[in-house]
Length: 229
Length: 229
Image (cartoon, rainbow over all chains, first blue to last red):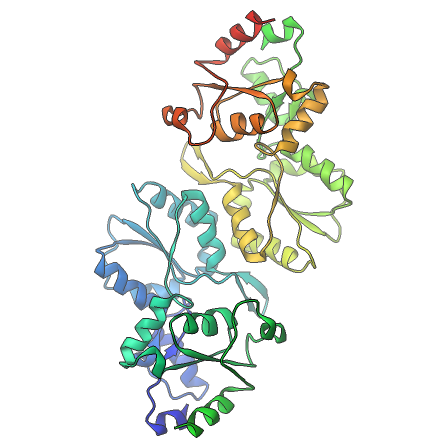
């Protein structure tokens, strides 16, 4: 990161993190030694807030407690949509029924989902991600959720707009073959997969996503990018 | 019911009830004055038990506490499939993750669902039904559930086999346009919709299910059937 910043290239961090505010997300990375600030982060919750404001939507929130501050400035009285994130322990039977009741009570239900992940790994095992609960509500209400976050095209477009560059001028580096690489390519960007984190060898035979390049780690990606300046 | 039984016609009660054993289901109806016994009831849990035995499947159960006795004779050690019913309060975050972990740990996940209902009404409001949670697990594990219960063809076929009659000799009477009427017709039976219970006037314009007849209540259905003997 330091070498990219020193080169003068513009940089955004695109995350699907919805269990914490950007402030806490950034603090965690700073604690790990990364040079990163809140205004360099593109995340689903602020993207959802922009949509809510543009369309005068008042959300019923089914999200993680730690994400709620991101919606501080949003009017939540008399809700006319549901926003669902990775609510983790907040995915209770009562909370799911409540979100469902709000949706089914609308003439035309509006469901906004902060991601479409299937599952993720924690120290105590695999956990169902927001996408699974989104599917449950979609089925019960016969609606299609609007997904904010990677791999949505609008999410990458926001990041590009924030940097003021075109897709052709940008490159995505990520470990997730579908959400990072596929999403960025759909948006017209080139994308590199790092062979760390979520990467699995079978990703290299993915049926429909083909990265523009592979690198063994982030440092190697930076080497290649800087060589081409 | 008394008139049908007196006529000598064979009779089965086909229910998607999965919040109680057949014993308790029958007790409730007997309490309401109906002449009904356990061996006249076709229900999803016993149908699932037949499948489990036939295919040597050992289930991890995500069902209502009151349904567990239906699986008393089934080996549940070292599970190689998941059976999901309307678990109600048992649909906790922990229980959903546990069922998911069992499924995703299988080479070829097997998910058996006791119905595919979207939601139902209780005195304190609408509740998500088993179908919504089935969809969540289907999406997370990229599998398709095998649905036992109405409107599955195999479920109606079981009821017919238990009576020893062909579909052409049988008639279904029900209030649910898709699960009762549509399911029975798919199986080759004729089906009558009663204008009570779940019936809604808009059912009469259903896009793809057309009952063979409508009746205002069960007694009227019996009148018509007995007149034609």
